[in-house]
Amino acid sequence: MAKVKFGLILIVGCVFGYLAYHFFVKSEQAAPKIQKQREQIEQPPKTEQKKQTSENKNNTQAKKTHKTTDYTLPHEVSYNKSGNDFLNDIFRPIGWSHDGKFAYITEYTEEARDCFSMRIEIVDLAKNKILWEWNYEDKGAGEDFQTVWQNNYALFKKQLNKHGINPKKEFVFKPNRFNYKGEEFQIVLETKTDTDPDFGFEVITQGDIVLESKKSKRLIKKFKEEAPSLILGAYIHGYLQSPDKNIIGILYKRERRGYEGPPHVVNFSFAGYDLSKNM
Image (cartoon, rainbow, N blue to C red; front, top):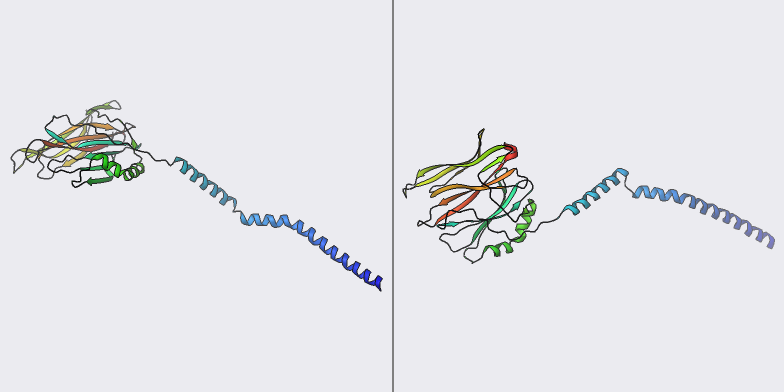
């Protein structure tokens, strides 16, 4: 009887051993296939992988190329040489972008008020279009240009960087006559006048800024003064040229009679022109 029991135990043990052996062998054989299937499920298609790689590369390049520019306090550049009997608006140029945008500051002269006021502009001179402007008046608080620049520098820097303005240290006005691609040109200001009904003297009411050569005459900008204009004279001071030499910013000034006579007030404005597209 004991022998029979032992034989049965031996048979059962062999059966379990056989089953266990085949189970583990098949599991090991199936493992690589299961792993491969998992990898195929987890990994995106090749086209998706290429897309992700391309996006990562573009993001990396964007991070590398994105950098901001800092700006120092803009200095005054003189534009009026008419003498000491004038109160001049102050011109503070900042810089150019590579595509002809120009940034500058006008610090207004105050004839009869004790306050500080200014204006910063970013202008597309190829289209004579203001892209961004900011006006400020301290309302008699006693501020000056340096204080206002420092207090609002973060805003100025953001806008100047947005429009790609590169700071420049030196700005030199060029004369009204110049040569471009072998042709001689002259910038001319043509004005119309009328007699002021209240004061009885002649004032300028409107003007045309034109570019002349022997072959052609091109209108750059028209301006009209609101009555009473009290503009006694208007002149072209000169022009600034973009880094690529194709775009010019023409500064023209107007002498306005003081409220009680001299000293008179001198204001300035800009007219832009793209030489490369209009010649």
